[in-house]
Structures are given as structure tokens and as C-alpha cells.
Image (tube, rainbow, N blue to C red; front, side):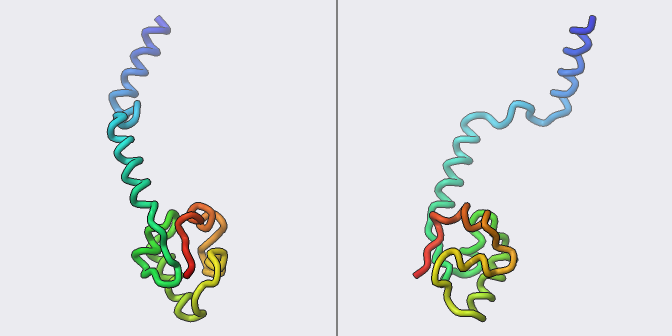
Length: 104
């Protein structure tokens, strides 16, 4: 009787959870492909506008605008690590985007 009760509870949970097994394989492969394509372009942090900077992982539109403002006030960045001088940019943002950041 305990097995039947557990089965009924499991089925009830599955009914109320939208998709307990996750997206179908084709959807997740398509999502991964789109993410890798969108995130592969280099971003020159000295010339990029806020929209381009916001394409970096972990950079919101607001943070992107802070980066542009900092650059306008302090001049161009000499190396990617200089981004850490901008309030809100930490090691995580820098490390997640190291391959995409360029400084020219």
C-alpha cells in the first residue's frame, strides 16, 4: 500500500510541475548553439557601446552604462583587468568574459 501511495504522490507532483524532465534534447541543443554563437564575438571595451557591453556574461544594461561612463571620465582601458575599477565589475564578470574582451 505504501508503494501505491508513493506512486500517486509522484504522479500528482508530475501533473503540477510543468516539465519535470526538462526540455526535449533538440530544444536544449538549439539553445546551447544559440548561446555559443551569440557569446563568441570579441568586445572591444574601449569602443563598444552599452548594448555591446551588455552582451558580455553578467553585464546588465545598467552596468554596461557604468562602464561607458567610467571610460568617458577616465580614458581608455589599458588591459581587461582595468574593468575591475568600475563599480559592479568583479572577478567573476572578468573571468567569465576573458576570452571575449579585447582592448585596442
